[in-house]
Length: 339
Figure 1 (spheres, rainbow, N blue to C red):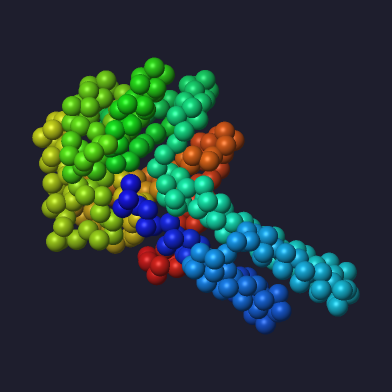
Figure 2 (spheres, rainbow, N blue to C red):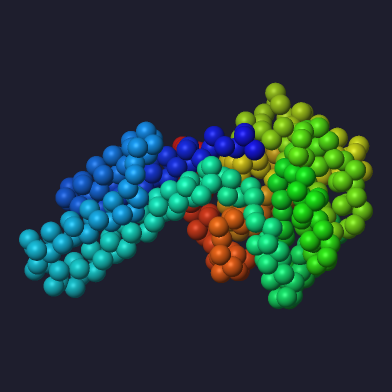
């Protein structure tokens, strides 16, 4: 989808700027190691921006870093025999390597897809089928939004909420038959203004057919897929009220669930929507733990990427990536100057 393809380079630069800030605060301000690494990262940022960097980032940075470590051991061997100094140095090495891996991960994603956002937009059909079969074989209970509204409780069960954004045609042609066969519930957040209008999107007949199956729940995703951080009194009626109204007219469903387009939100957005009182549940894309604000609940989703291995999928399913995604989201917001 073209409107998301501009986000990849922005996210890449945010990662790199974050790395630079992290290196500055982690390393000693005046150490040769920190100064050279900072300089190197600035060069990497410039060259990646100009699309002229050919050597993998991880090879470049780690090679220079390891050479510097070797130089320090040769020139000051005594300090590496002091346990306390050596342990601090090792902690710094480990942190540097983890940071470099984050940058490298961004680069790998860019090579495999148009940008890092596309990785969450599509998944191989056979891989998706294997993942859903894993849920079925391991006795996971998949919920839809009606289960929340009806107050269904599954205290001892392994539960999962499967969601898709926008309302693409593939949700009906590919996902729905698979989930019907496996008897797994799922949910779709609709870009309401696109349904029955834009090419490759669902029609309202398809939405109603899936609704009547009791397998599929529906929420809203604004009317025009606008960045929710820009919603205010000037566009609130169109993006929220109109989206809910059209969905009610077309399906007789009252929208209680809302997902932030692009995963973008901040405290101001949440407070604004909370005051309006139109939704019971909001969904983010950063893996945060459930947050309860008066009568409003926030749930953090964890995205499944096309390049995820089966082990990655299982680890995400078991919540092992939640803190990672929540931390990355906080770093991004800090870099953007958001609250």
